[in-house]
Length: 403
Ligand SMILES: *Cc1c(COP(=O)(O)O)cnc(C)c1O
Image 1 (tube, rainbow, N blue to C red):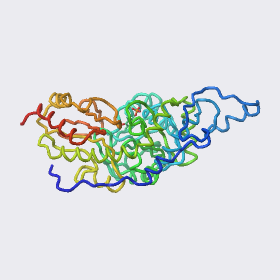
Image 2 (image 1 turned 180 degrees about the vertical axis):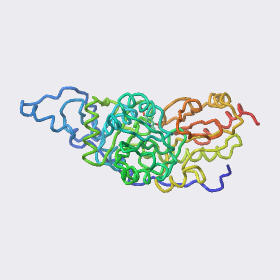
Image 3 (image 1 turned 45 degrees about the vertical axis):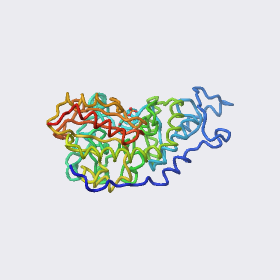
Image 4 (image 1 turned 45 degrees about the horizontal axis):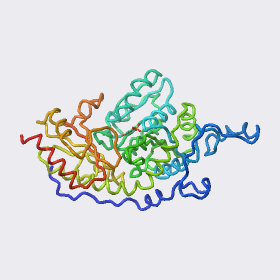
């Protein structure tokens, strides 16, 4: 696909830089130090029985009660994530997947019906088809690219949750979240969104989302050395539901990992700025290659989902997809990935290092969507020099040969 239009260069919102430097600073909790120490603890001692007896009433607040309810190492991270998502409260949980499953359990009950995009993150699908099904919740998978009119007939009287993930983290369909959320709300359903790709670029609560999920394992951690999730809401009622469920499940994130993630988010805007630009540069380069049929990167003019991205997002992370020309086989694309020197083959993303992951055969679809006509490869662009990454991709293209 020719690429005459220069890719957009959108500076990050200046407020993100300021937020990430200041939001959630631990302040007086830690004797004036800039960062909190790692508070490790289960037992909290009380001066009297009266204090002990009243403690549980504060479980929806940032108060020391018992380790599982959070510590001064968790709170700054919760506050900074809530701020960048534009919500009021954030619950930190042990992984991104836990940040998906906890609100699903909070908003659903036996007998309910759930709408899930066909492009959804695989483990989220497994949770719906396994555990939620066993507990009496039925899931219908819908075309992620549907408009409001297409979604409307899928609602049933018992549909209580519309789940969105935009763009899909393997095939990058951008969803019309505001329009879909309007239908959901008209039908009395809550809107959950996996906003891991959007980070701060997509502001969920101004677009109809009730509960936003992020795998902080990705750019917040930023160094491929921790697992964490954040669940953010913006009303007290949603907070009681989500927080109550997280506590009921015994969800707890290690204070060591929260401390690392807090360190990560302080530099996240700088990394994102660089990785966004590098991602767009590498994606644009790939578009010029004859081996490549299509690049699935919503920030590229002319790409699928670009108009919606342009309308709803203020930037892009560095995760995108490549569709090879149909003549290349799965074995050839695997050989291509193995020939890369700087890109590691592996799951996850958002770290400082680049990754490549062939996805055909690993991604499940049941609503008839997701046909791209060629082998798919997902790339995560790290902090390496763009010219080194394109040189690496170019040398690996040699294994594909000219066809
Ligand atoms: C990685 C990821 C998750 C899960 O995060 P983990 O911390 O690895 O459990 C959830 N949703 C999306 C879109 C992801 O990419």
